[in-house]
Image 1 (cartoon, rainbow, N blue to C red):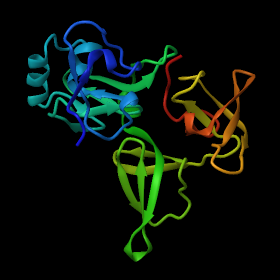
Image 2 (image 1 turned 135 degrees about the vertical axis):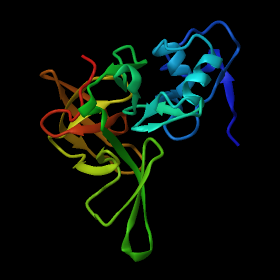
Image 3 (image 1 turned 90 degrees about the horizontal axis):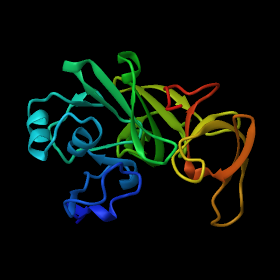
Image 4 (image 1 turned 120 degrees about the vertical axis):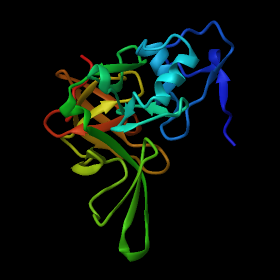
Amino acid sequence: MAKRHLKRMNAPKTWPIARKGIKWIVRPQSGHLLQHSMPLAIMLREMLKLARTAKESRTILNQKLVNVNGKPRKDPKCGVGLMDVIEVPSLKLGFRVLLNKQGKLALHLIDEKEAALIPRKITGKRLLKGNKMQFSFSDGYSFVSDSKDYKVGDTVVFDGGKAKEHLKFEKGAVVYLVSGKQIAMHGKVEEVKSFAGAQPDNLILNIGGKSYETRKEHAMVIGREKPVVSLID
């Protein structure tokens, strides 16, 4: 059973929080990787500044004033992570969770049209009865489809809960780096270098006219010619 709390000092370095103060901090519910997500209540308090205390955060959530990926969320431990969208309809505000150049989780202001788009990276798949495939995504979401084109590592862009676009992990794809030395940067795949055995694949990326080599696992496809969602400059 996963622990419900963790020490503030041991919280992921991606969390933009003070390291001193109250010893314990809430652990988000499972779904995203821990370093790519935070509990909703903490985001309201530490990042959006809509609450000063945990009690105020719970009051706001109990009134269904905050949406995550288009649905009201009441659980303060709800894990909100990379590429998720937080909306406060009463204030007409929408934000996408991204990473900044310092490698910290950050909220990027977006418009209502973009708020409907949720890119999700495929992390697993399994065959079901009726020759259907169930796909698992990096945020814990699962999806059943007849398509045989989806592969682990690809990205599916959802619009209002429906699969809108399939972005293949291939040469020429635009990828967003979610870890590694070039975290939060994006560029085009120039080459995929495959190795025999257990060694992971590497990528050669063109980022701003310069070539970089990184592991494939650090990258998420977010477009073909350009990103399908806006990013932090």
